Image (cartoon, rainbow, N blue to C red; front, side):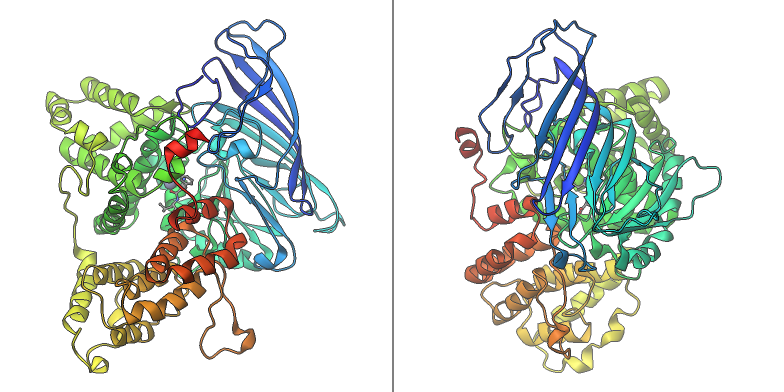
Length: 636
Ligand code: BES
Ligand code: ZN
């Protein structure tokens, strides 16, 4: 048995080194059926009897397989398993054609992080085991995996007379860089490809995949920044190792903003705002190519090493490619999310910690929040400052990546290396600076604040705050037309608008007349930018007992399930798509529940199947439909 509290695999004794998949996708019965062949490295001498253990509600059933020939330490074993997925597979969402952009073909996609790869393929589902893989996948629609597409040609569907949606094609993939199981991924739908410009002298390519109807918009949204940031990242770290960096725009039920699957980052279609305002998410996922996909957390307890580092580096790039003020502004936006999440975990202080001591069988998704991102990034930011700034810190960052590339590490290993680096390459002052940090408070501290207050440059937040203060002062005014108009936002970008709306949430709730005026004058009630729309509803629902909250709850409910009617539009004007990204749907459902529990539950029940199984699980916990109790998990 390994030390990963979220897995039952005995990866300490034996570990997967290569996986060969032979899969067939069936959109009618919604299963993947096939064979998995494993090359395993024997690390210890224990072997088990063949058996399928009882199903643990979080961790699944342990599959024990005896090794018939005596296995010697250092030797290898080959194993084949024929199997098929079930309709309960947590990793997969099968969409009807009506749930896609084009409406003509069905769609399939996976989400394996943190612990769902095991529902897609029998596997040692721990990030401390890394393996290469190859796959042959047969389907009637184009397929992508977290690997390099070897054939047919990598620019889209076949041109040999076979028809999309009717004729079977076998797609061949190879992932020759060892990856953890959570980076396994598959998607299939009516996908098209557009290449992105690659700087001279690179040995990688980059491109965008999306449904046929969205691919041009997707190309436009990402073509300016993607390869520019990838190149900047290589300068800070080491060259990109995966050969291909593609983006795939998924249907709206995708539960995350982005997911850094190897070779192909999956993103939510809500990034396509037409103004490149949300490319930060792509910068974040690119960064995982080194922090996470290269240097990996050993298990869920050390998840912050992935997300904290990635968030820290993503913001460092803001400073390098934009301005230092942009970096600080991102920290400021994050500090509100951090505070909100720390507050949500007041009854669960163990999840307020950076390094989390998960119990055996606890679901890491229950602890998913901005804590590992924001506390982690602030800790690194604070270490950078304590050491004396980027001149001292940047060489260490490169060394960290070089040292642990391809490995999976714990917080202790990270800390030991940090000390070792400055002992060897730094001054006595550097080591003393490290000694001065309150390690225990940062790693194991609970509560609503950071161990040290961190100050950020407020330049970019200033205008947002001034405007919010004006609204607060006008709360008793009846002549809003004289005080505010659309030009108030002229000089604010989308992130500054977000900060304006967040600042408003820090005051007492505004009266309904003000919310109405805010929604119409600034178009917040109809904006297609989901980041802004979410914050607007949070402002409107701030006081659950208010008239404004009751009225806007109905709008927010319609928005989150894609049933809103845009005013002034015809009957067919019922447009909009489900807001499957958990960052949007979970706070909306929670806010609805506080205002009108019946509305929240009814809305959810009617549209449940529009959400990904992972999102369903968490929304149901948020709405009290299922328990998050750890003891219940273990006892079951
Ligand atoms: N790897 C995460 C998404 C994830 C984490 C999925 C844990 C499942 C379990 C991804 O890199 C991420 O952080 N996405 C963020 C992007 C944001 C921080 C820019 C998201 O989806 O909101
Ligand atoms: Zn991330």
